[in-house]
Every structure is written in structure tokens, then in C-alpha cells.
Figure (cartoon, helix red, strand yellow):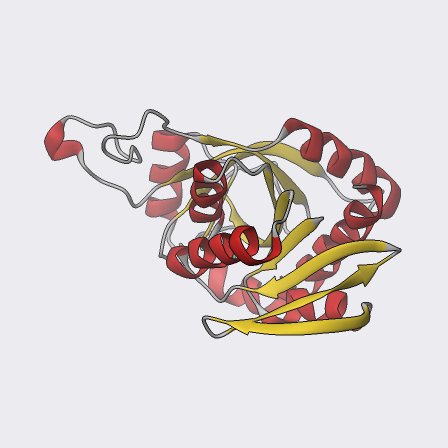
Length: 230
Ligand code: ADE
């Protein structure tokens, strides 16, 4: 059974609405909707925004629901010129860009005393998602790359360029890296799927408000297909 985590209400609202007779379990202020979509068992939940919410949500999915895989859907700011608003990014791996223990000679993004720098997404889930995308979102660009995560909405050209240079990221958002770490700790395969809502630069806030809806539509289309294919 897959667990689907969206950070915002709009992302998971549609999936919940498509569930046959969902059972709702509330834990840590999060409503977990367990039911069937397209004949497949699934748990859909809104984690809330940010790294702590994402990580707590994963632990509950693992402990209470015994999920076999986790998909984090959502939106992100693009860090690459060729990745446009409305396109999708499927994570190869995830790094938390706001981790800084450089004082102790760790590279930026490295969590001290962990033997992993970037948390690798599951290849099978990514390939499944890429196949689903070609079917349900044939007109948009689909990219594979590193997802960067921090408890920050990135909306300046300088910060964007710094992130792209230091971490070689494809997009930036606020939960994926924490969800990846929590899934890795539990040895549960995961995938992060991000639809691009803005370019993470000085126009990010304006673009975000205008394109959030389109971006969510693309990620929901994919998630639905992925649940059915899993
Ligand atoms: N989610 C969507 N756009 C974002 C941005 N520019 N920074 C962080 N999270 C985001």
C-alpha cells in the first residue's frame, strides 16, 4: 500500500474526493484518509508545510499504516532555466539545503554523523511515475533531478543561483528532503514528485499564486495514475 503525502490542502483534496468510503484517522493534527482509489488501497494525508511536518507524517504512515512506499506530491520552484512553470520534476535524490555544519568540516547540506549526503529516491517508483506521466500529462516537460529542501520559500535570484551552484538542484521546496530522510531511516522506498509553480526568483510569489492551480493539477493527475499502477 502506498502513502501519499501532500503539503497543502488543495493537493490532497481531489484525491480524497475520489476515494471509495474512506476511513479517517487523526494523528498529530493530521487527517489520514485510508481507502481505495482505482481499486488500490492507499492512505492520503496532508502533512502541512515544512520539514518537521513532513518527517512526522512519514513516521505515522510507517508505524500506524505499514505503508510499503511513500510518494510526496507537491509544488516547487524551478532552479534550472529549462524547467518551466507547469513542468514536473521526479526526484533522483533529495538534499536539505538549510543544513549547515561546515564549522565541523561537513559540506553544506550534510547532516552530521550520517553516512549519507543525498537521500536516494526509489528507482522503480520513479520509472513507474515517468511512464504514468507520458500517459496522463503528455504535453508537459518531465525532468529527473535533485530536489532541494529547506524551511524557506526561495524568492530571490541570488539565493536561487547559490542553490543551483552549491547543490546542483533541479527544484526547491519545503518538505521532500525531510520526507526522504524519514523514509530512509525506516527503509521505506519513496519518491518526490514536484510540479513547478514558480522560478524561485524575484517573481516567485506572483507566479506561485497564478500557477499553483495548474501545477497541482499536473501532480494530482500523475499521483492518481501512480496509485493505480503500483
Ligand atoms: N514551493 C513552491 N515554490 C517554492 C519556492 N520558490 N521555494 C520553496 N518552496 C516552494
